[in-house]
Length: 109
Image 1 (cartoon, rainbow, N blue to C red):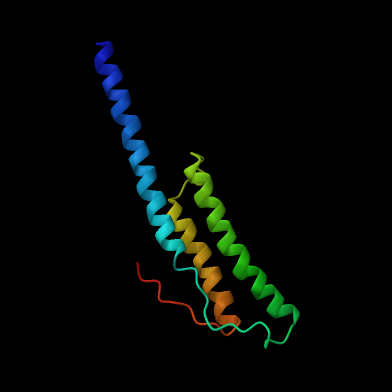
Image 2: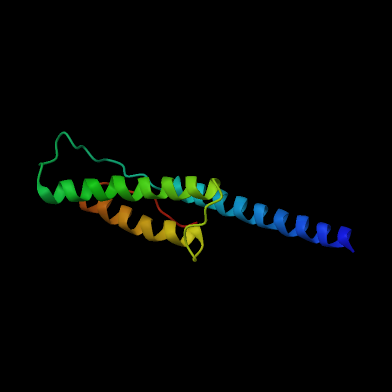
């Protein structure tokens, strides 16, 4: 009986580890889409609105990196899937990129 409980526990823990691993892999793939091309900050007028969008661009990507690192350490920060959180941050990132005149790759995954 104890062996059965031990086997069930090991199976359950293995399933959790693989589920988290797949979630992290998907999150890292989504992170690769956080690219904003064709922004020439040297030629850009420095205004408070441009500074705001530059800050949003950097902070949304940094948040995603931080969330992925936390998940790798075993911390589950949200009740919704990590991919959904990253999708929300990507919307912010994409908007900031567009407002700065940048071009972002398509996000169709």
